[in-house]
Image 1 (cartoon, helix red, strand yellow):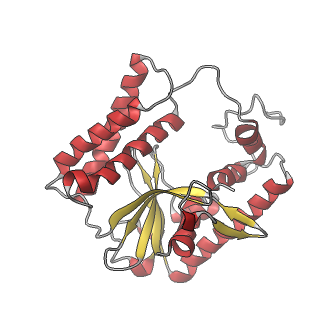
Image 2 (cartoon, rainbow, N blue to C red):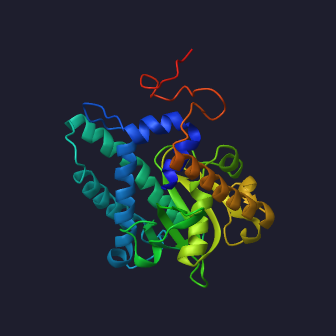
Length: 290
């Protein structure tokens, strides 16, 4: 089971059924948030994998910031050229300009960071045949079920087998530690289990990295590692008991949701009890909206 599938099922199993199982498509392709996120992820992957060879560094600083921005510009150009849909000139220009504004800002913010961790692994697949052999088994959810997914980025402590997971978000919002539990956002806590149980690195924490807006990273961080991971929002640092409880609760929730999918337990169960205003699947939903 893929982690994003489980999150969608947690939002509403009926919405999951329409969106992920029936999988309706629009007749005309659109430059939507999903496409923007895909292009941004592609550009970031190209950038960080080429950074050591082309600029001779693993982490950014002020000395190489301008050169790094030029490299990011080239990586974005390549990512946009790889889009497999016909775009009008206006659509292509809008996609380029909005993403360039955000990605250029990411480069300069990375160059100003004081964190000592080194970006080492990118778009790490696990739980599928396309993953590296040691990662193909996936994360155990119990009852014969495993989790699959892709971790956008892992930053590693150069002096020890420790690391932090990062998940890019093309929008402005990142989920806080409180929201991760209350809104059943499973990616970060489950990715930290993958980091520990499959990759073999001790997780220091995990954060969502929004690429737009204020780009304030939020997530789950171990308070005991605050000196290694300074600068995050105070409420996202949890003591050891609360941190690991949140991680294990995510595993239990994922197992429960996967079990429901396996037996076809699809009902109208929007999170919070009411259909959210942003859900655009209502024309196909069997539940009449007020």
